[in-house]
Image 1 (tube, rainbow, N blue to C red):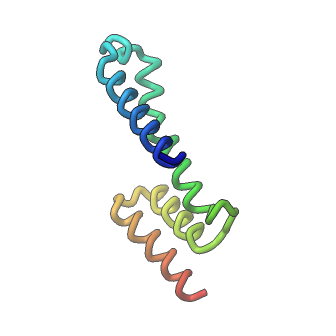
Image 2 (cartoon, rainbow, N blue to C red; image 1 turned 90 degrees about the horizontal axis):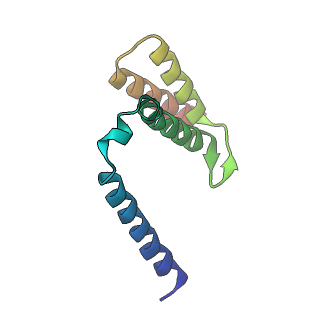
Image 3 (cartoon, rainbow, N blue to C red; image 1 turned 30 degrees about the vertical axis):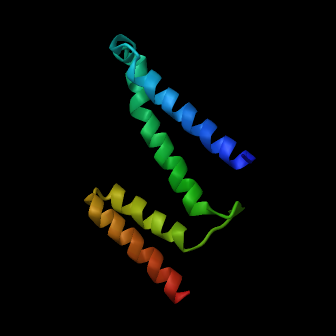
Length: 102
């Protein structure tokens, strides 16, 4: 068994244990107001980090290209309170147009 399989099995066991432990935590721990406020912010932070990494990097190099234009259009659409499908479609269209035209 090589290092890849050891890492895969180890990661799977850790993921299972974390999920198992998470299901067995008493609800009184999650009822605390600080825990609830942190739990509402975690998805926002993770999604923001994912967008930043996917927009500005390619193969561990910093890149500024058509994806930045799509992100800018999406931010503008969000500030204008556009519906989510319009935000996604406008960002995708802008990114694709700049990619194909330049």
